[in-house]
Length: 299
Image (tube, rainbow, N blue to C red):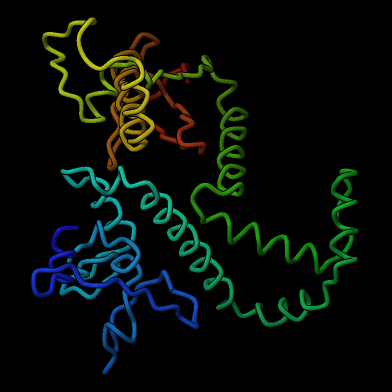
């Protein structure tokens, strides 16, 4: 922020602030410059929307750079930045997640539109009226199949598109179908548990939130009070997520003998022996990790 104010400093005084109202909607999709385009003709959304995070007006998400970085990778990098300014910002993580969802939805829709049958399907869906949608809604409420083929086609396209969008209902439906099919194939799970660690008063969560707590010489009476602990978690939701994943991974490793990395899943002897398969529900989504070891136990 200091660098941005220095740019406005003129003759020992702070310059004026002028916000011009535009006549076009602001695009939150960043694209590399093409041809003779300039930054003024295609400004980067993140550089303009978050001057505190990008005080030099450069380095925004999807901005021009010698080595291309994907949107998801750049967001993940910012959320790991050492001074925590990105993940503690009141709106940046949520704005980035919303843009990521829209990008995934548009990318999925683009794939469908490139199919050879899309033009014929689009003509069929163009005859859909408000009355036909209301009739389809009444049929669904009565647990009856939708009779209108155009509405069925539209529903199929919507489900296919949302099936590639993180956090969508279609993703959950897909994971649940995997869960039930696995139950049919391997019989019901031996154990079904809900792990819900409390992040408000756990000292490990406070360490993730930036508190200086010596876990090797821990004293329960030391550290922030109750109100400060709650405020730390409220101000830093990313720390709460990191705490949750840390606790879940520790339980899987120490109790069930499962080690998970982005590249492999390793199973060893745990309190139930060597597990064959487990499902874990995290961030509202069901994720499957399948080990190759044979056993009758499943979590």
